[in-house]
Length: 268
Length: 285
Ligand SMILES: Nc1ncnc2c1ncn2[C@@H]1O[C@H](COP(=O)(O)OP(=O)(O)OP(=O)(O)O)[C@@H](O)[C@H]1O
Ligand SMILES: Nc1ncnc2c1ncn2[C@@H]1O[C@H](COP(=O)(O)OP(=O)(O)OP(=O)(O)O)[C@@H](O)[C@H]1O
Ligand SMILES: [Mg+2]
Ligand SMILES: [Mg+2]
Image (cartoon, rainbow over all chains, first blue to last red):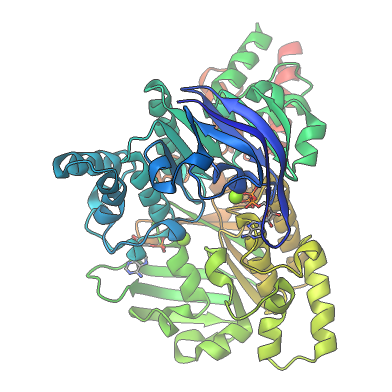
């Protein structure tokens, strides 16, 4: 499902101008990463997709709906949003119930609920924790419960607010493979991240934001080769891109294999 | 400065130990890194070193824990917090909830200690400048982005000037520039004699700033040593901590005989520039 922002401005009640006119669209099945400095407006922006926020001016569309014309409950059938802070999202006393909440709300029958929950817990490595109290889990585990809760809703659009935060190596890999699977299923994925290696390795398009504006919008290879933009957004290139550029290479390796392929080519 | 001997711990109402027989020795005036998988027990250890376990969380704690000359379990939380500050993992939960502005929030701990108004204002100004949050001082601590809130949480502990600072994933929500800034601040604090223990997943930054790194796995400390040595250890994959892309690229290059076998793989950008510069010369020569 396609989503779009059309000259979206948002000012918080206290007067902070968080979004200063954002326009872009994300076609069905695309995987988009949003990066940029703390306070750039990333969270504020994506919270418009499920109607938590309505633009001060401009419009946001999700498929053939304008968000202004629909309730949060209606929009939640189309857009799943995983919160930056899982403790704002989770409230049940059992992991299973937190994950079942969405599908039940969407009126899945109990059998479909059970299978959606089982699948989502498996994808996030939490099968063993189904009966645990979320507050007895570590923060990164709770963050994955929050992710499972959204996956279980099987929405055509999935929005992840800093999904790899606090995850270990296995957790990051798990999330990378979830993003890949969502893409393969032609679902639209939008992820906010501060992890540039994760970004370069798993997304086809990157938007860089600073101070309520979009500074760049292109492929990872292009975006991470714009030093002024990166500096302005307090972002750095992925590790091996930084290494390649320090070594004076002209290529832009976005992952380990690409880097070593380059090395091999140079040794011939 | 910090000495743990044979420390074991089980949370209340659980039938298993989260940490068993942990020994840890942190000298004064160092930045020490601790890495471990999700659920390995990092936060648990951070709470033990700062007295929150057992004074807040309870549970079954055994062994000896000495920080800045204080036997923490036999002391009180009030005494503990005057020796060691804990930046907790979730910045949202660090905020007191008692104050309307970031400025007041930062002063909150000093106020409780009866520090004079003028000195309070000076120290708030200093710490805000150090962390680049001057423009946020008059905002509500709740009307902030996640990363901004994390900086406020860090500032609210640094301002206390405790001899020991324990930071539980302090840069988890920071942008790359902010992450570097916080690590630079840690190094500065260390230069002024403060002892820092930082729990982190960002291996590259730990390599650049920590002298020693410890690994938690299987409820214990399973490896300790100089940052580069520990952080290039291939077992890091097995422990689900993972190595940097620099380390992985060099390992793959060695496997393909593009680089000579090394004794210690590179971990940071600087380490790898050394290694791969060599590669160019090797091929030319
Ligand atoms: N509830 C709020 N009330 C007022 N201002 C807010 C509120 N939440 C965020 N802001 C401000 O709006 C701006 C954008 O915040 P937002 O949370 O969207 O940033 P972000 O890009 O997601 O940052 P981070 O990377 O730190 O999560 C910031 O200046 C922030 O201080
Ligand atoms: N209050 C609690 N009661 C019972 N068990 C707990 C409690 N808090 C944490 N645990 C369990 O103790 C183990 C260690 O948790 P801890 O929070 O120390 O891990 P961590 O290494 O900090 O993980 P993360 O990287 O996710 O922050 C986990 O298995 C967790 O589920
Ligand atoms: Mg955010
Ligand atoms: Mg933790």
